[in-house]
Amino acid sequence: MKILPEYKEKKFNQLEEKIGIKFNNPNYLIQALVHRSYLNENRDFVLGHNERLEFLGDAVLELIITEFLFENYLNPEGELTSWRAALVNAKMCAQVANEIGMEEYLFLSHGESKDAGTKAREYILANVMESVIGAIYIDQGWDIAKQFVTRWIITKLPEVLEKGLWMDSKSRFQEAAQEIVGITPSYKVLSEEGPDHAKQFIVGVYLDKEKIAEGTGLSKQEAQVDAAEKALEIKQWPGPRITILPKEKESEII
Image: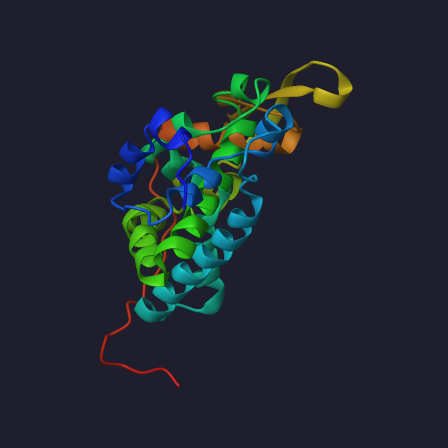
């Protein structure tokens, strides 16, 4: 096995130290960070892009989360499904990828490399998180992949439950606003910018006549969601009430 020079050039050993895993074949880790766009400009690069590893990692991540929830909680299937969705969605995966510092290891085209801080970059980082999980599974096996997911993602569950992140932000803000101040939020498009194929919307969210926050997005719905998220951050209202039913380790479910 020949380790690619990019391993030293990009200091992938530091990434291994960060995640606490020494790869048997570091090329798996390198490939997990290769976006398709990079190959368009570097056709002699010996590895492929990360999409097959992403496909694998997506399944591994979902199964690890599902197993954990099944083994530890007696809540109904619908609630567990919502909790799982909050742990595996793009926003959560991108957040964890940023916490680990994966962005500096990305292999991107010149065009894609300019999009730092955008929704497009968040999507790339979310996919990379899944591809890294796939690489860990291939190189290290199930147990190490499970340890990685537990350390970096399952530990987010208390925050998900406390803040109600298992609900979408518009629903959370509406429920909290109705319960706490007795007002149903309303949304208003404040401006539209850019050409039709790449229009940017700015939307305000209001409680009665008071504007609480503004959000941006490539669609009105996306901008409303962004505005609701920012409004929740401003108000710091508690998440929706939910009954958590922990499973006793001795109990059995037939």
